[in-house]
Image (spheres, rainbow, N blue to C red):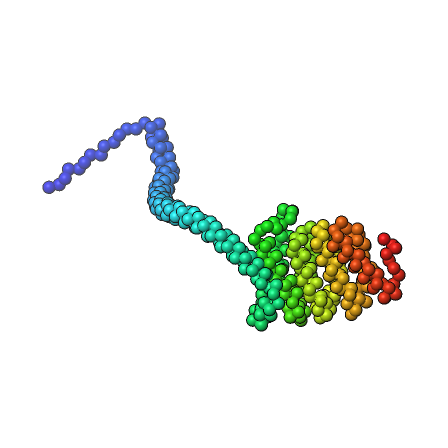
Length: 336
């Protein structure tokens, strides 16, 4: 059966409407691709934004986890710091306790050393005791230790920042006095004097070195003991030769002759006398005395109010004048 033929339907449109429709179609053809492209770009940007947002979210989560981890580490470090602080306080308290204990032990050792050396000082006044000390073979090491101790004590007194005399009643001072007294007693015995003259050059050099720069009035008892030790050694010809060869001997003597303590001046004069009475060194000593202020100091001490010091100064001056006469030098007494 045949389909009926559809009739074409026509719509009558005005010319103006057709023109407008044509214009709109042309505009749509022109702008629609742009709009589609913009829409595609927008969708693409939206997709990128979502990916960036996801990345940012992931980074935020990572940073959040890292922050939590660092916070845990910070808490752990704070706990460790607190523990170390408590340990430090405990160790500091223990250190103070050990320091106090060490100070007490040092005080005890100094007291024991001072007492022991004082007893040994008294015992060394006997000649047979010095012989026993030499026979035992321990005297050289003891004298080396004594010289180092004397040097350390004197230098520590020079290094203090506050001026003023050292405490002469302290245990340290009594200790070094006892050491110097033992050296003096050893030098007073012939066998000890011979030992120091032959094997104790280091100790003798230390004694002269310690006497050279001493300030007037400082450590008078220690100076006296060291001068007595040098005087006792000078009784030995070998010891006198060694002492007289020291280039700082005469400067040391005239410096000590200016000391404020009369006993220091007295024993300095006695050491000078011992040097002057030895024929083997009188020529060298006489030449040195001509150019030194030592004679001036001796002349000044002849007017001392201390009888022993005055008499010793007069005797020393006579010995110097006799030496000048022997050397054929003019009498210098008239120049003072």
